[in-house]
Length: 355
Image (cartoon, rainbow, N blue to C red):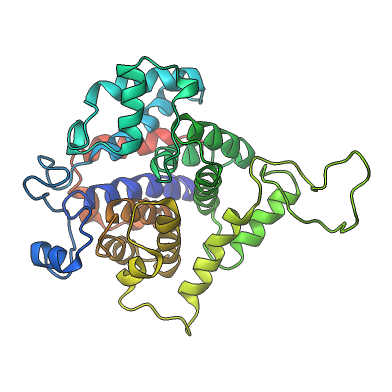
């Protein structure tokens, strides 16, 4: 295993670990209730409480979104490529049969609003795949694209188009698309060996201006009025602005600035917001991944202990830190206690064999 493969495998296992850690204490918005149930510091996998989210899932198991990420990774290993039609077929045959369309049902003991919508349209109404996306502002599409960020980490242009296309399957909002593509580009950059720091945004913008990343560049060195008949922008891109590529570096600067203090670090959830929307999840995840860039355990546990949508926060933070420290530096206890760990480790190896 070379260094890039180590980082790529760390990204995938980091996502799985974060997802599994969140199964027990998921969605406690009242921190007093969270502390009364699980103590003031959760440090390991836990069982969910009876009649709450993920009831029936055991400590160390993945819930439904982790299962979807796993299925996407398995799809890429099997096909050794990404094709939208075959991906649709995989969802129809290997994911939707495990759902029942209800919020507290389906594999993993909870089905998100996005996936309930997909189930309703595909299974109940037999709607075609090209007309079932919704206006959800959550992170489901971003999460299932993590294996694509790993698989295509050497081809950022292709990655951008694929993630944008895949996001549109379920979520039609362009802001969600832009933020989803940006996160997965950041993950790919970390796998390549770049740092999550104040300069990462500049590196990404250089790729925008060189047309490697298909974002719309708002300004250029030529500040003159455009010629008649020509578009005012310097580049046509997938999204209206490249700002989603810049925000990770601002979060990193905040995390590394000695004059900015969030203590304890789990209170980042109170600063950026505890709810599920993508614009709450990403800033907190970027902050924690930059602050604990060399400490997987502290990063994911602070993400977890922030309450609210802590499962996604821990999953996204886990992927970002895993891509920085590599699988070899993820504490063994988190891997050993994952249910089906051997299967997941082999999947990570198979997904990254060409890197």
